Every structure is written in structure tokens, then in C-alpha cells.
Image (tube, rainbow, N blue to C red):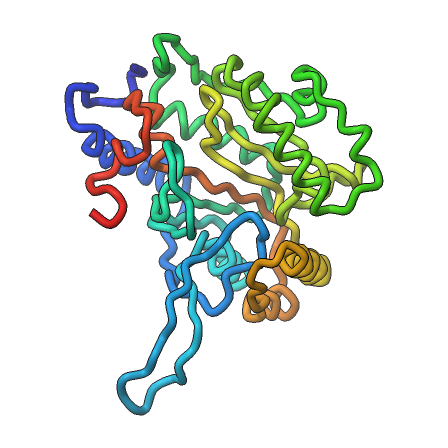
Amino acid sequence: MGRGIFVTRAAPSFILRMQLQSRLRAALQNRGYQEAVTPVLQPAPGPDPEIEPIIAPYAPLMEPDPPGREMYLHTSPEFAMKRLLCRGLGAIYQIGPVFRQGESGPLHSPEFTMAEWYRAGWTYRELMQEVEAVIAQTLGDRVTVGGKDIHLTPPLPRVSVAEAMKEAGVDPGPWRGTGPGEWLDRFHDAFVARVEPWLAGKGAVFLTDFPAPAALLGKMKDDDPFTAERFELIIAGVEIANGCTELTDPAEHRLRFQAEQELRRRRGKKVFPLPEAFLHDLDSLGLPPCAGVALGVDRLAMIAAGAGRIEQVQAFGFAE
């Protein structure tokens, strides 16, 4: 176990997780981040075809009151936090619960804890340097997973998606000409089958420069419009954090959202309303150049505790 964790594995894992979360919060505050508080209930969840929100219908019980409507437990505080950036805040973070429909398994839970932070004026390069420093400060210089030491002292290795696919023996050439939905499906299948096992042997590594169809809301590279400035932090084969240089163009945001809505429609999934309040702030106030990252606190605690399942680092399991 790294020197950063100050309880032993003999202690309950959820206690280690609580202390780890406190250290993570302190690390961000010491770097000048202000803690943000945003609504958990949202009027629009975002149209990502890979994520399903938990629907929370609202019914008024008193007058005067807003009309009943379909609301959603947030899958991420991203839209609300970016609206705060539009209002002039420059470095903000949030640590709290997020909710995703149907997610269960060793690494997944319908409710889990996410640490998300953004800094104006940065790109994914500066943010990766900060993420690795925060991880080292929180976990220490190394962790032991499956009997193997994983060193966390910065700088951690960087490997692009293109390099990782080549090393793992994946050739995306035959995918050319396929639609975005089919391309993403093939990318995901190849990633799980070939790239993830290859990454599992690399210890702690940043996977960088994702292809455009997997850009999410990341900005494209200035010298390569087909590659996004996006990264994932992988430790022992497990995705711990996902970040990028953020897209700031409101028109491009709307186009990407509409494309995701269409993909959901083609897959027979429920199509959700666009986050119009978010889009309005992007258009009227402007999102400054910035970078942001979402980090899974439960997964980070699993690495620290040597846990095999997410519920082992939660005080209470789902619906317990």
C-alpha cells in the first residue's frame, strides 16, 4: 500500500474510502478549487446513448407550485458546473452521488460517488499533470493490486488510443465508412476484447487522444480534426478518471447532442429533451476555454483497498 493511505486493509474498506475522499477534497482545495453545489434533479439528462438516467417524476402537492414534469437524477454534474464557469467561476470541484439506470457489476452501481473538477484556461495536458499529482497525494507513491506493485509517482506514461490499438493488434481500417453508431459499437467491442487486457498489464497509464466518434464533449486537436483532446486514467486495467479539453462552441454542442438523440432513436431508446438551459448559457454567456475531469471515487477506493467489488467500499450496498 502506498504511503498516502493512513489506515490498514484490516480496517473496513468503507472507512478507508471515507478517509480517501477527505484527502481528495483537501488536495483539490489546496490547489485553489472552490467546492460547488448543484442540483441533483435535472430537467434534461443529456442524450448520451451509452448512459441511461434514472427518471424521477415530479408531481406538485401544493399551490402555488410548478407543474408536474419528468425529471432526472443527474448522471454527472457536468452541465450545471459548466454553467457556473459561464458565470465567471474559474476553478471548481464537486464530490457527490451520481445515478445511472441499469448499471451493476463488480465496477458499477446505480448510485456511486464522482469527483468532478474544472479549471478555466487549461487544456487536457495541464489537467493530466494535476490528476496524476492528486492521485499520488491521495494514494501515495504506489499501490499493490493482485500482488503487484503499481507505481504512481508522476509523470505517468501516456499512450494514445491509436498506439494502444496498434499494440493490442486492433486494425480499425475495415470500420471506415460505417455510421457513427456502428463505428462506436465496433470500437467498444474491440476495446473491451483487446485493448483493455493490454492496458491491464501497464500499471498506471493515461490513455489519450480519442478518435472523434468517441469525443464526448471534448475539443478536437487543432492539428488533427479527427482526434479529440480526451484522456482516461487507467490503473490496473480499471478506468479511474475521464477528462478532456472541453468543447466551448455552442453550435457544435447542439449538433453533437442532436446526433446523439438520433442515435438513441435508431437504437430504439427513449429520446430525452436537450439541456436547453445549458445551451442557452453557452450561447449567451460563453464557456471559457477550460479542461475538466470526472473521477470515480469508489473505484479509486477499490484500488486503495484491494477490493474486488464496488460494494465493498460503500458503507451500504445498493437498496440496502
